[in-house]
Length: 452
Image 1 (tube, rainbow, N blue to C red):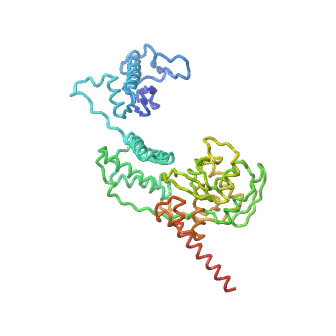
Image 2: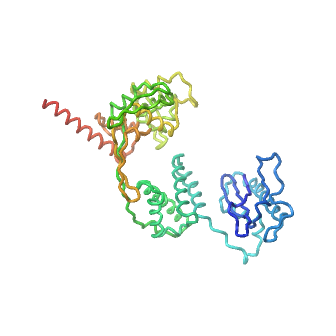
Image 3: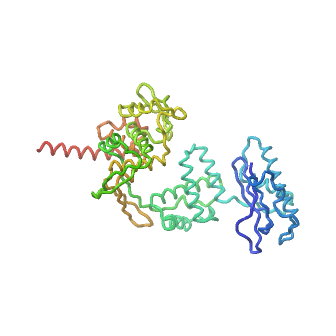
């Protein structure tokens, strides 16, 4: 339990600063002001880390604010609130309170619930941000959100706060939704695909609030908006590129390597953190040889491997998959068989973020630099971005490489799906289209060879 008292950063017109309380009980937080304000110089620091003995008072003795309230009265209120919530948490035991519970308990501590019913003020309705916090906690528990999903909602929360710190559910009528979309496109300068994602999250949140009875504003259910989404190219390595990465010997640290841009210009690159790049090479290739996602590769244990197969329950779909090990994947496992990793892991795991960083360096060193053009819309304008291929390669390209190579090699989609855990052809269609295009190109080469 944590109860903290501090001054609001912005003073009132009188020059005094409102006193604010932050109450955190079992990770449920409620923040509000206590109804009185003080001069900045009259407020005493109460930082436990600054002194072994906690300061007795928060307001300097013999002080009176502009409303005539004495320091003694203000300090009494603060101590009463602090003591009340210490007892309250003990009484809760295993129960978890809501924000409304904390608000009601604060009123009790301040003695405001003892007023006659006819003079009581109606309780302040929770803000949209308090409801959003409840939504994330509710849906996160029900759907067992991964860390990455929680991060996407954190991003959404930031965008919503930038859009309007005091925005309410009722504001999302047709005009409000138009403003929100325009804000994401113009003010935040987001790609159209990201705008669609943020709007979809808002719709999910508001629909949940409607179901809970927190709002009656249901215009979002009939709101129509068009998003210009361009299908981005599926980035994967060809067989030649994959084998080049697999067999690449990482130069020692500080080695200067001569490289070429996709238009033939020569430049130099200094090798930094060669050891991390070498591990990244092995981890990426293992994903490309087994179809594993980063999340599944990162939790692979030695006990998950037996009889030439990997037996793994995927983190994303919770499917139990047996995957046969080919000689390339087995060679990578053998390389680390005598190493001891935390938790019995089979491979030297690097965080996804760092691995993506090192992977771009690795593929740049391997000169996987064919120009790749992505087309997208931003603020209503069509944008074309052409970069060398290595700039677009991330950890998931390993899984894509496996799927594309397997399909183009003639392995039936239903067999590939047994390895990858895809449940329907819809998710596989982009890869099948690539495989069909590759096979057509190979047939053209075959025909050209026949014709001499």
